[in-house]
Every structure is written in C-alpha cells, then in structure tokens.
Amino acid sequence: MLIHDKLVNKVCQKLEIQFILLAKEKLIREYDEKLARKTIIHKILLNLMIESHKKLTVLMLIVDIKHHEAILIKL
Image (tube, rainbow, N blue to C red; front, side, top):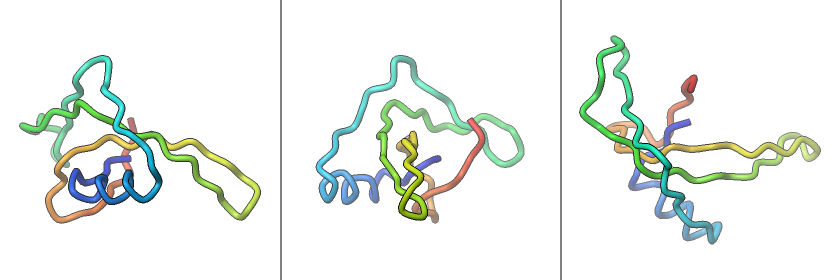
C-alpha cells in the first residue's frame, strides 16, 4: 500500500508509531509503467484486525500520491 505523506503524520500520531527508514530507496512507477520522479525512503507497519479475528501486519510506503490518501498496489 502507498499512504500519502501528509496523512501518515496524523496516523502515526494517533497510533503512536514511528516511520521506518527503508534499507534501500524505492522508485515508484506511474500507471503507464514509466518511473515516477518520486523516491520512497520511509514506511510504516500497521497491525489491522479484520472481522474481529484476522490480524494482519500491513506495510505502507510513504509518498506524495497527489489526490489520494492511500492506494493499494502490488509490490
């Protein structure tokens, strides 16, 4: 998942979690598979509960994604 860099500050403050520095920078691709000019250097890990019994840890990469707050992607 991608999460907008402006939304992530609110999420981290509310959940009391910290950014994690990526071991290696990651470039993202636009919808047409061209490399974007944005580099991802941080992530967060969120623990999610689904239907009150399935717990998932979700990796969210932090980047300015313009008009969206979050985007589901295949990594």
